Image (cartoon, rainbow, N blue to C red; front, side, top):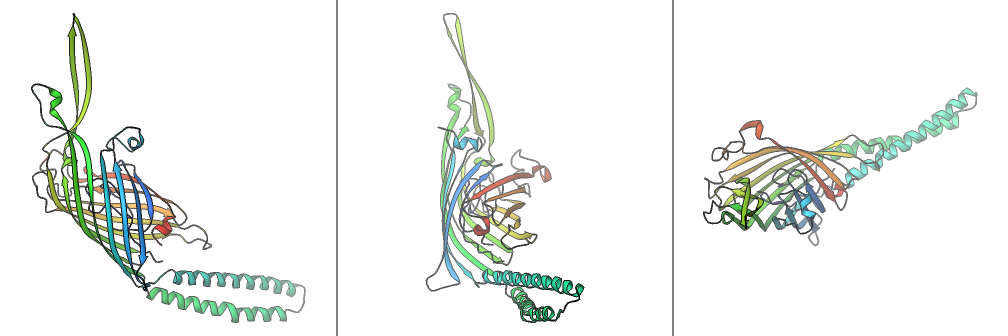
Length: 396
């Protein structure tokens, strides 16, 4: 079947190149785009995001069109539930806008619809032949004349069943030769902001002066390409990002205690302060996202109107290169794979992904981070709610 992917900006605030896509990963980034509106909750990375995208055709063209999208995301370090608590700050947010063009051979769903209609005609003809065969058998058992029924069977076979079988064979051959393909190119950009508490060092006069609130504002811009052929989808994004290295700092908890003495009495106040500790700096780098999705249909329903299950297999790579501060954020690469399940009537997509970060252990060499190898493997869960069925969202 044809899958026409426009753009659905998927939002979050981790290090990513575009922030919109059909599936997800640890850093909430994907290079393969889709068309529609959706709300996404990443259970592992506490992120909630809302997306809307529009796809259309150029005037006078059936094959070429435009894509445009807007996305907004928020992330709370304390968890997804914190996003909904009254008065609680959402420390990270991002806005992304994008626009582009798409080109396709317009091998649309009419081919598959034609095959479904032919299968229904074949089923109907075979059922009628079966009923006539039962009638003929009953007449034969009653020693009655079966000539009229036999004539109907021959006529039905010659005029309905055989022509349908010929058309089905021709449609199958044609469908196999003409595969749907689609190419998409787009530009994207946006801005990000976040706020967090950082430990700057011990102040000899007032220990609380050793904590500062960092308010970072960054930006990004890049290009993306998508290529689809039948049930295979490929995507890549290349983006320049102005970011910081907050994600590589260590989160520490400090217990603060102050005692006040008055008239032989003392009152002790205690508080816990959580802050990020380490060498903090702003920087810029080139982020590259590479994705492939294999769309697999699970089983064949007995009737076209019945629900059909699909699974997406999504191997991917995330690359950071040309870092301006390699001593703080070295060039590094992550690889992973995701599995996502939905059906053509569902408005919910669920999946799981596993990711191996920093496969070259470049980050681990400059900080006491996770050990190399499988012990760094992270596993995440994703739930995505669409305002329409995911069959339409992915245009399967």
